[in-house]
Length: 106
Image 1 (tube, rainbow, N blue to C red):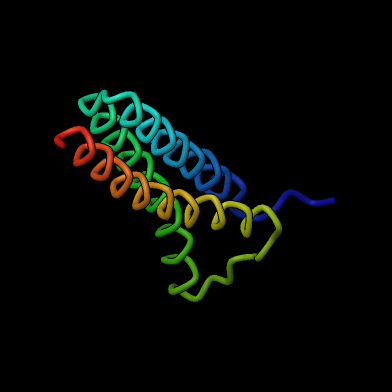
Image 2 (tube, rainbow, N blue to C red; image 1 turned 45 degrees about the vertical axis):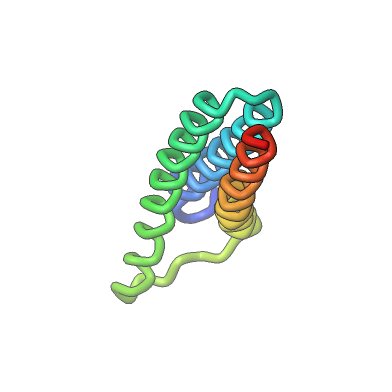
């Protein structure tokens, strides 16, 4: 079986998307323990990983928009799934951290 086209970029999507999701999960756990400083720092790390993943995605989109067909593979779908899941987790983490902070204030 041949190696998928753009394998390095796809692996960046998977790696950075997974890292972003993991940091968001860690942020929620820190907030649950009342450590909001750590939670917010972890959200920033999640954002940084998402930016890296978006850069990888943008390179693929730019290639496609330039007329160079990008091969669709299971790894590509997996990478996109990681990115979208990470975005959803980060958004959810922000909301959950806010809820924990409001609960602690009361």
